[in-house]
Structures are given as structure tokens and as C-alpha cells.
Image (cartoon, rainbow, N blue to C red):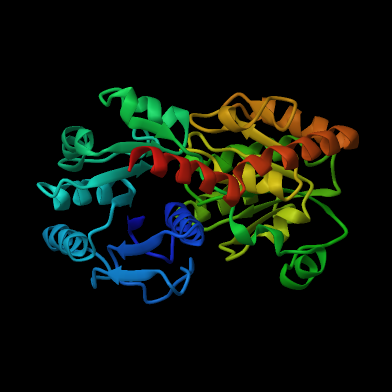
Length: 361
């Protein structure tokens, strides 16, 4: 089968990583794969198999949308794929416009919840009008899928994101070599953009409630973003300068995860919650706000993770305090989490894509 993937780039973003993983996985099953990116890839963080053909729209940023529509149309007419798979909402809209009149099968994918990742005019109107022209809409969680009530149930499918294939690479030795943290201490770790939607201010406040009585434990937050200054000020105000580390953006954070002892996802909303399954695979007990969407679909509460009321710093503090004191509970939840994470290994997710392709193309 000839499959054309359409994405933004191959150097940033969770959806872009997933595109690379799925494209590579389907290539290994014998499909002929093409990838078209809306931006030039001056650097590639998410590599493709050398036998996958890459087309670029040759505009780094602020691309001309009309040009993109015709570039997509040209690529489809030239390569004649059996199916096109588009990633992310604006790309989905541009791809639908580019395929008008071509009678091609198109799978569009949604990776965030539209109620929170808001599209503004005219994109919001175009999405509501054009999405019904797609063959299928594939969402990363049931919560995201449910939003699209205007689409027929027969056109909607859910396939979760896969774990990164490189997650197994990082060892204790690499952690000690690459990180600047003290290996003699215990760590709670969180990861994501420093954005108010990630709730790191709530996490830091919750940690402040238990920090004094748990003097051997520190908090590490991996990620970068617009809220860094506000979080630094909060850390200073709470007198946690020596207890909370804003580690910044780290290309491969899994050595941090593998050598911490508790993972927290404090997001107020998500599309799926990739960091949860990554932490599970790294052997960490996961504590997560039960936000829309994803955590409640991944975690069975108090079995392979712990769900906490969204935004409740006191409940979060209590849960962290309980896990810190109860080593057996941490190990039990971590063990169950490792087992649960195997449902999201790339081989399992590729099977779902392959099954859907065979049924619908």
C-alpha cells in the first residue's frame, strides 16, 4: 500500500514524533511510505527510514496556506497514494482542501482536545465544515473523539500514541553523567512545557506543603516555556530554591525519569498524556490529575497509577506524602505501570494502524 503522511515538520512536537514512529513502523511492514512536511526541516530530530521519501514545502515559518494546498495536491497527483494520513488540525484542513475533487481516501488525526486547544476564525469554521469530507477521523483518546459529535460514529476511531522507541536506552550511569542533580537524593519528577495549562504552579505549591517533613526529597520539572519566570518567582517565594529544579528542555529526558522515584502529571487538560505512559515504561509510579482527556483512560486508579482531583493541591500533596512514606505501594504501582505501558509499545500501536488500513483502504 502507498501511504502519504502529512505533518508540520520533523524537529519539534509530540504529534510530529508520532508521525515519524508510525511512518517508520508501517514501512517495516512493507508499505511504500511518503512524508510531506509543511515546513523545511533544517534539522531532523525525528528521523525517517532512509527508504522513506520526504517532501518539504520549502517555507520555514508562516507558510503561504494557498501554496501549501496546491503543494499537497501536486504531491498527491504525482505519487498517487492509496491513502493520505494527515496530522494536526490546520494540516487536516489544508489537506482536505488540497484533495477536493480527487476522490482519495484521507485519514485525519487529532492530538489535542479542541475545547482547550482552541482554533480561531476561520480555522474553527473550516474544521466544522470540512472534517466530514475525510474518510476517517482518528483521535488519540476517547475524550478527544467524543468532542466531534457532528461526525458519524462509523467515521471515528481511537488509536493511542505509541511510546518513543528510544525509551529503553537510558541507564543509571548515563543519568549520573548527564545530569547535574545529586544522586544521593530522592526525586519527584514532572515533564512538559512551562505553560499554565500544565499546572506546574499547583505542583510546586503542593510540594511546598510536604517539603519540610521530607527533607531528602526534591522536585525536578523538565521542560521550557513562557511560564519559567513566574515559576522561578513562585519557587523563591516558597523558599524552595534548593529543593525545586527547573531543568529546562532536555532532548532525551528518560535518564531523569528512570532514576527518579515518583512521576507527577499536573496538567489541567491533555489530549492523551504521553508523559504518563513514558513514566510508566521507565518504572515510575504515576500520580496524575484526572483531567480531560487521557489520564482516566490510561490509569486504573490505585492499580497502575493514582488519579487526583484536578487542580487540588491539597489532595496532590496528601497523595505524594503517602507515596513517599510507603515504599511497597510505590513498587506495586510502578510494577503494574510497567505492565500497562506495554499496551502502548510501538509494535502494538502499529498493529492497530495496520488493521485499520486493511479494513478501510
